[in-house]
Amino acid sequence: MRISCGARQNVRTAPTYALWYKDFGYTGGIPANATTPSFITPPLKTLRYFPLSEGPENCYGINRVPKGHYTLRIFFGLIKQPDFDNEPLFEISVEGTLIHSLKSGWTSHDDQVFAEALVFLLDGTVSICFHSTGHGDPAIISIEILQVDDKAYYSGPEWGKGVILKTTSRLTCGTSKPRFDEDYSGDHWGGDRYWEPIRTFGQNADEPRSTENSIKQASDAPNFYPEALYQSAVVSTDSQPDLAYTIDVDPNKNYSIWLHFAEIDALVTDAGQRVFDVLLNGDTIFKDIDILKMSGDWYTALVLNTTVAVSGRTLTITLHPKEGHHAIINAIEIFQVIAAEPKTSSAEVRALQALKRSLGLPNRFSWNGDPCVPKEHPWSGADCQFDKSGSKWFIDGLDLANQGLKGFLPDDISKLIHLQSLNLSGNTIHGVIPSSLGTITSLELLDLSYNFLNGSIPESLGNLTALRRLNLNGNSLSGRVPGALGGRLLNGASFNFTDNAGLCGIPGLPTCGPHLSAGAKVGIAFGVSLSFLLLVICSVCYWKRRQNILRAQQIAARGAPYAKARTQFSHDIQMSRQHNHGHTRTAAENGPSLLS
Image (cartoon, one colour):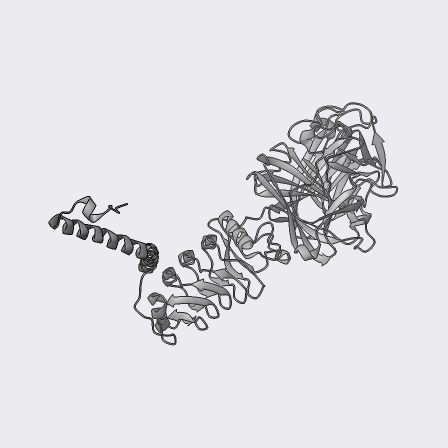
């Protein structure tokens, strides 16, 4: 996989038309136009840079990486704007292990415009981080993640998955043409290596040799060297029989040296005609090297490897002739052997990331990559300890006091099981104190003072038997202080609960009323709410019944005069009928009836 940093679409580059993927979703930083510092830099037009305002550590995190052995290569660039530093200096780590530090003047040396390392990636991801040193903003043109054979560059019993080989120098001798393996038509399992040309080790010190003959045993597993690598060489001369190459290195480091030979000189016609020793910083490492005898034929590749400890700042490789013709060499590879740093416990990393999200940590904190490694660039505010038995780093202290943090404390904070000190005072953290804090039994100091925490103090904090200092003052906490905490005061612990108007239950705080459990408080609140609801329903029913009665009375009052007159008229008729029954008269006597 090749990434064109800052690119918004996929790109192909000449002469090999290699595919570079667009840069999306891997990291932060700012895309910008690029200036390539060297002709060997991929001809890409964009880069991504990381201003210090976004924090001192910034990382590319790439997922779904198959398990295996990889060459990782990062090319640096220059921002195409006049007001930016023309040569930023920064450091690079891979999977938490520091692999490269840019040195002043890197833009003037082709072999310094990139960093490269051989790394085992085993957890499905890769993290490549850039660490600011205060000298300009890190700017990256491209990242390459190229899988190689699992046994590539095997260098002996100590070699393994805990070792990173950082490329220090890779030379192709006797030619002036720099090449990548793609240009050499090399097998892709070789990792597309860059070979710096070196036509001579010194003026009048050697002579070039070249051939167009095919080279046998070159592109073989596990290293798959390109055949063309062995078609050029340098040979020592009569005036300078020893063939010597010197390179600057970091002191007190181990280096893996790979020397490449093929007998391509027509003057050598038989074994024994060219025999030489190989010395590293004056010590003989390989004796009586006879290329024809050891490789078995002319135009046949021979590779020798050794690992040496270098105490000084230079490494000198010397080929000292012993028999017949002068010494010859075709290519040189030098790697610094770096022990991979153990990582921080993954559970604790996830807990810190959850804390970062919930508290809204500012960009200046970064908190990218691994919290504890590289040791030169730990996360701001985090203190680390190494667990030798588990070969893991863990967090034993966290100090983020007075940093303007907002948000709340997540339950995941309890996964920081090795914490001895937690200081989050002087921020604007709100919400409740998570009861899960009571499971961090190693806590000796807990300072949450001067925030906006509310609710009660969890009973679980009484389980923190190692706690010697607890500051919860300056919040909005309420309720009874857990009895276990109050009892701890008698044993010399320093606890501060002041400036919490609702707290009670220990000397110096108000006396608590009858203590109710949380369940009881919920039950009371439910009962009060239900009673209030019933009262409202009854009031509504009474009001509606009263309204109906009043309405009926009003209707009756309006009809009362007519009802009274009709009732009196009916009464008169009845009385008249009773009177006539006793005194019967004829119609003629009484006159006409008026009943209608």
